[in-house]
Amino acid sequence: MCICINCNHITECSTYHLIESQHKQLHVTNNPLFIPKCPIVCVNISNNSSCIQIDWDLVECLSFVEKPNSWNLGSD
Ligand code: SF4
Image (cartoon, rainbow, N blue to C red; front, side, top):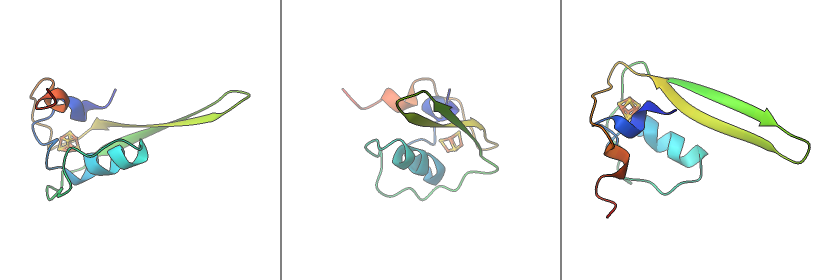
C-alpha cells in the first residue's frame, strides 16, 4: 500500500503527483512544489491472460510525516 495516503505532504508532493499520473487519477494539487527525500517506489506488474496491470506504490520515504487519512481529507 502506498504510504503517501497517510502523509502530511500529500497535497504538495511532486512524487505523489507522479504516482497519481501513473494511476490516471485526478491530482490533489496542480502545483506540487515539495521534493521528498529518498522516496522509494515499488512497481508491481501482474499479468493474467487478458490484461497487464501495473501498480505504483510508494513504500519508503525519509520525508514521510504521519497524518492519518490525508488522502481523503477535504474530499467531502
Ligand atoms: S510519503 Fe514522501 S512521497 Fe509520499 S507524500 Fe509524503 S513526502 Fe511525498
